[in-house]
Amino acid sequence: MSHHHDHEHTHGRGHNHDNAQHAEGTLSFEDKMIKLLEHWIKHNEDHVDSYRDWAQRAQSNGMPEAGAQLLEAADMTARLTGKFEQILATIKK
Image (cartoon, rainbow, N blue to C red; front, side, top):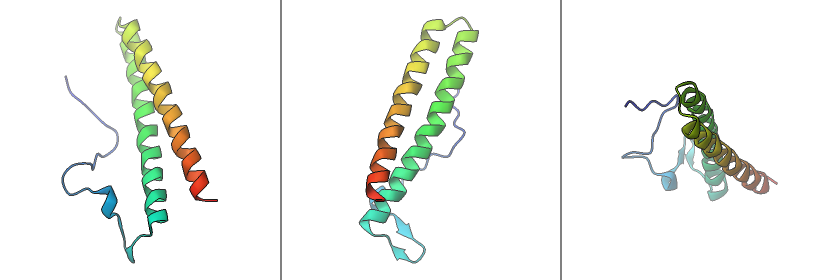
């Protein structure tokens, strides 16, 4: 079975969230947090879309239980995204 993402994964070698750099130099801790949260929000939104798409596909292919569970995973991920948005709003006050 193939695995496809509509976004890039850059969490492999050489990718370190602790060492986020900005073109003008090292970011402040606050700026790093903001960039990370924005990244995680976008990343989760991409996954929610994918989970919902595959839920529909599963249901269309005779797998209603799998489809329902994927929709549940999409909802859980969307709630997590909401938490990240709350954190981001707190930092940006």
